[in-house]
Image (cartoon, rainbow, N blue to C red; front, top):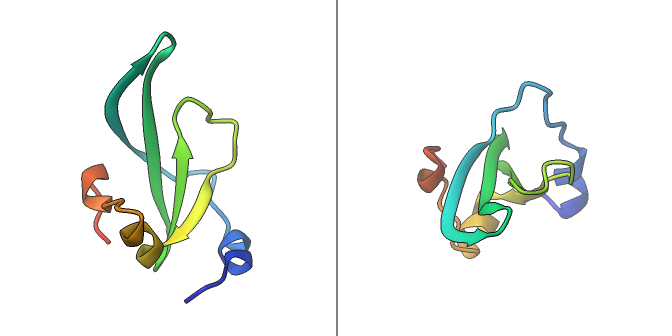
Length: 78
């Protein structure tokens, strides 16, 4: 398993495509959504669609699973 420091050493390419899943909760400025992109064999970047200027957090597949985040909900496979 990678540690947090190693996860953040992996680059996110400029052409990386983030898939979006929305939870149905809305705010005056729109619906809040989570974005997800695979950045390595067992590594993911998770972002906030309402704050695209904030760098995404990074997680392993096991960490996503422990948090209850299923890449299939984003149209991605683990």
